[in-house]
Amino acid sequence: MKSSIQNTILITGGAGFIGSNLCEYFLNSGQKVVCLDNFSTGHRYNLKDFLSNPDFKLIEGDIRNINDCALAVQGADYVLHQAALGSVPRSINDPITTNDVNVSGFLNMLVAARDAKVKRFIYAASSSTYGDSEGLPKIEDVIGKPLSPYAITKYVNELYAEIFSKTYGLETIGLRYFNVFGRKQDPNGAYAAVIPKFVMQLMNYESPVINGDGNYSRDFTYIDNVIQMNALAISVKNSEAVNTVYNTAFGDRNTLNDLVGYLKKYLSEFDPKIADVPVVYGEKRVGDIPHSLASINKAKKRLGYNPEYSLETGLKEAIRWYWNNLK
Image (cartoon, rainbow, N blue to C red; front, side, top):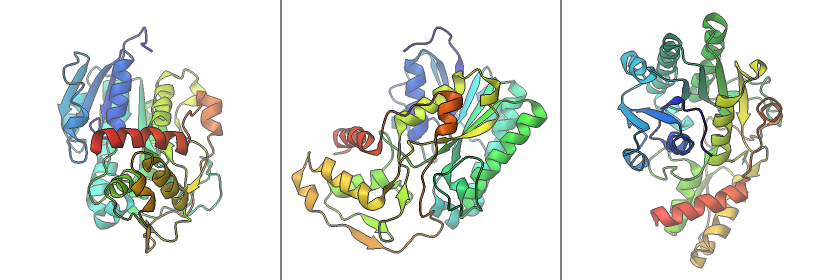
């Protein structure tokens, strides 16, 4: 549905999985969209449908460069900061680059947004912030100690955002994403997310490798639920709803064994042979949180969040997309 008011929304990391879906949604909603990306993990093909749209502007730049950040925020009403180096294993292998992008780059964007007097800075936080906290469901006010360099960087983002809200009056909202999946998520590379990676392997009759015994559980969150949260974070008018963080999830959990069962079930509707592909179990992964389940009560109460897609309904949509686009 198109909005009667046209805003300019800067989406950093707009060529990535979540960012490109946000670009598409807000362009379809009648907004102007500026994408800032250095294409280190994002892809130009994610933007090909937008390049001819007069309301879309691409800036090829790096959030580690303050001048690129300042250029990108010019005229922006809102910032949706998605640019980051994800992946716990990547951060363990290369903590310096992860910190440069996720902390220094984040600070650059905050400074640029403050100086440009944007209305609100909404950023991708992470469920990894809960660290070694064992309580379930995860409630925003109760976190543990981080279990990886990546988790540290995402927690520092929250601390910086809070300071900029208090010190400079910049409105901020952090969205703690829980295992987001869906269309456009890259199945390739050493740090590919588990769902697209497993989908590609199963489509090629390759055995997916589960780290551990498969009983670790996650609150898998379909991309359209994440889009809804970002849209609500922009539109909310209640002053009590800003300058805080929200779990961005469905509010249910499934084990990795459950996940593979669903993948084989839904993929075998396209190719029955996939049902017979065996699963392999490997070593537990360093830095992994055993169980993750979000309380979404705060987002429901303050933002009016109402996630529409469970893991099963989201997987059906995602698998259809992968089959049509990657097979």
